[in-house]
Figure 1 (tube, one colour):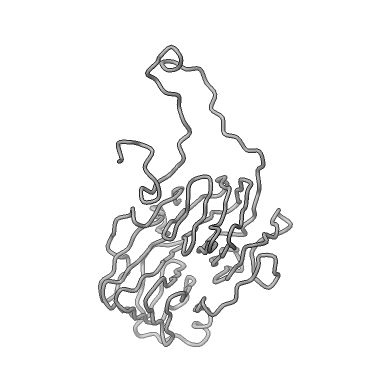
Figure 2 (cartoon, helix red, strand yellow; figure 1 turned 90 degrees about the horizontal axis):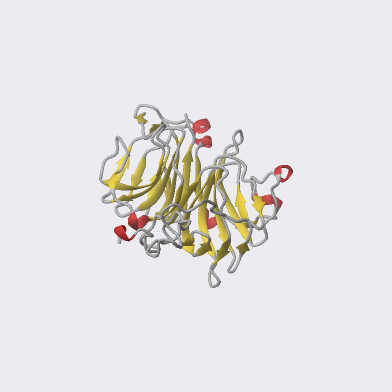
Length: 300
């Protein structure tokens, strides 16, 4: 399974050769989150040169979101804010990517394996299952708006959240897995601790989010397995916050008020009888030196 990442900034990650087999050109990737058991991953990829690849099939559900630059998939050109999703078994048309293009690449339920299909021309039925979007042309819908396609299940505890806006990009009709853009209005706040029955991952695109583990800035990322409590979220007062959000099922918010974390025990070789000792502290799981200093002085 994927490890809990809470949280990391892309500037703190090293570069690897991109896992894009059968491609022509040069590209590199940063591993934001990686499942070493099945190969699922969330990656930031930069193409160092023009890059191309023939049509074919991915072993994993594969999504690309264009942060900057240009991606041509078949006859369609995707610029900043462009997105495509190829579910398993759906042929991905030939790709052409311009040098210096930057994308977010998500793989789910499989690894980087790609099987070329140079002799196979996709028919209209196959292409209809491929999802391609220009998100900049899509409308924002409030979470309270029934048209937004929000996967909240109200019978399981889901609630409307005024002040949040959605662009739904992909949703699996069977599992409920989804990928969407979310925008929080300036000063929006979700004050109680929350947890969910599904995993939740996010990549910040614009603005800042302040919460109990620190401040999410553009380029910060987290991945939380199901049932991890988190909060209190407050969006930037000036411009709000926009981020990519993915979950492997219906996102239901279960809230906890008046939460406390207490440490109990009897001191052995520290405390009032040991003047040079210090009491234990509950360290926050901060992983990003670019956002704040490491707690351990050995990492300075």
